[in-house]
Amino acid sequence: DARVTQTPRDKVTEMGQEVTMRCQPILGHNTVFWYRQTMMQGLELLAYFRNRAPLDDSGMPKDRFSAEMPDATLATLKIQPSEPRDSAVYFCASGLTRLAGGPTYNEQFFGPGTRLTVL
Amino acid sequence: GDSVTQMEGPVTLSEEAFLTINCTYTATGYPSLFWYVQYPGEGLQLLLKATKADDKGSNKGFEATYRKETTSFHLEKGSVQVSDSAVYFCALSDQVRGSTLGRLYFGRGTQLTVWP
Image (cartoon, rainbow over all chains, first blue to last red; front, side, top):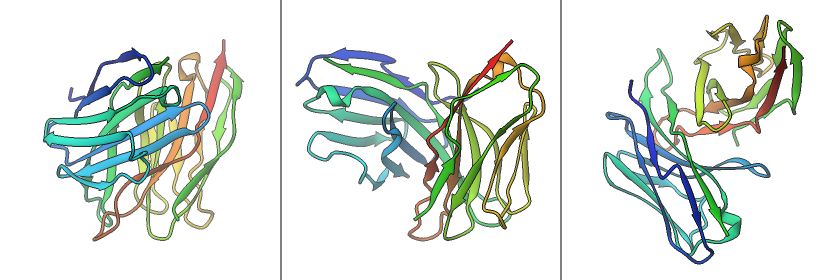
């Protein structure tokens, strides 16, 4: 049963510290997405990759956030320095472009999330 | 741009009641449509999908029909259970063609609580 894995599941840190979140996409998937979920904003797309290349990171605060895919089995999201307003649940999702008798579409599979608390 | 609007929650029902959660979309092309479910403390899970007009997606007693004429994809279930309590997200995916990106656009989510 293939799943997206994320580590850590929970992270509590102090303002100003660096935070790194990791994601292992499902083997064979060619897209990876990072989302942030808060009560106020709901689900926000931060960044995503196709075939390890960044396609769009316009949803990400560039001054403190960075996302990378050093290889096909690992995606990272880094916050430096962290701030209390970054407290949220961060989800990674992976997907596979699929033909469906017409236009292609991108079904996504979500990881369990990293709950980040910045004090 | 592409977007999804779903009914505001929370929705509270008694067990065995009928459920409808409304979802409408705006898209320039021919999107695929999805319903995702999020149980407490977990990530989103795909519940059902439909890839073209008049398709009906179904899973675990839930159904939704892709209505192009009304740009809707309403989620229904004939008899809800306590275990259906969760947050439900409607989403669309634009086409992956050339420069288009194939990302998902999510609604705000609808909290469903089912009481025994």
